[in-house]
Image (cartoon, rainbow, N blue to C red; front, side, top):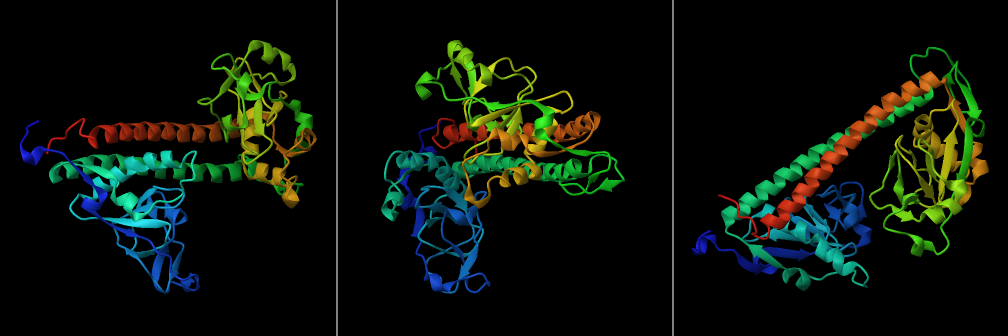
Amino acid sequence: MTNSEEHVWKNKTLGDVSIITMGQSPSSTSYNEDGIGSFLIQGNADIKNRKSSPRQWTSEPTKLCDVGDTLMTVRAPVGAVAKSTHHACIGRGVCSIKPKNVDNEFLYQFLLSYETRWKALEQGSTFTAINGNDIKGVKIPYPPLPEQQKIGEILSTVDAKIEVIDQQITETQELKKGLMQRLLTKGIGHTEFKDSPLGKIPKSWEVVKLGKLVSKVGSGKTPRGGSESYLDKGIIFIRSQNVLRGKLKLSDVVFISKEIHNSMNNSKLLANDVLLNITGASIGRSCVLPNDFREGNVNQHVCIIRTNSTLNSHYLSQLLNSSFGVNAINKFQAGGNREGLNFQQIRSFDIPFPEKEEQDEICTILNTVDEKIEVLSIKKNSYQELKQGLMQQLLTGRVRVKV
């Protein structure tokens, strides 16, 4: 690195390098869905996948943004960043940031890197909004323009790769949804169907109460002492946040002592148990414990369903995560009752029940798609980690790029 002026990084503020326009909401009487006037970007609800996604128009536009401007939310959540793909009116929930003498992509990537600082200010405080002076005063590292352009190009290339993977995940999830709808109602290779309490099903299938196909339906409890009983190591203790649809998340699992585990004998877990969230916002999420699972326990918000030899646990979990599971749960949640499911209700679920061999075949197909989604998710995470590392290195000048 030379000391000549053309290679020196400077410290500037956003006010120095950009034009910041704070949004102003037009009269609500001007809002319309008929395409009259300008698109309206009010706040975070009008942003999707880092791009503007307005839901309505206004016939009386106030402040405007252009295509290519960076949008940033200025009311809770503060600091969320996106690119404007519309010439639009901006409401008071956002501002637009237009480059003045800085590379636009470099500016956007810097603002992305700054998001976590706004979030840190929000946490544990009454901080819910920022004004124009707050934004103008933010300090931005300022390398020479060719270096800005190269940094922006590198980071946007990684973003483009993440976007492609996101699209692949979405397409595979849609494929999974279609397969579930077909396989869990029509099975594999059937030509004759019959009416049932669940609608048309293959003639050879039955509809059976779940209680007749399981050896256990139960849950655990929070240990005496609550969260103070949780340890950094010991016996795995699963809570509802660990049970995702089709996946057990152990990255934030807590542990309990062997003594507490043994005192909760009725909720000890076995490999291939089906776990079902039975309360709260995550009600209905289900997964299966892996074959190599050794020992663990659950709290009162997670139900253990232990199938007998005639019911494939993965088939049951796929059912519970499908529209079938949603409908079965909604049946007991009618009228706004959100107290949760009880064991008697779970045992009363009517299950479409093919022969075990066909259950296994259905699971093989659906699990293969799940595995593809998981591979793509891991790939996406690796690129996100790469992007985070590159931002820390390139946007601070710790690593210089050649131009």
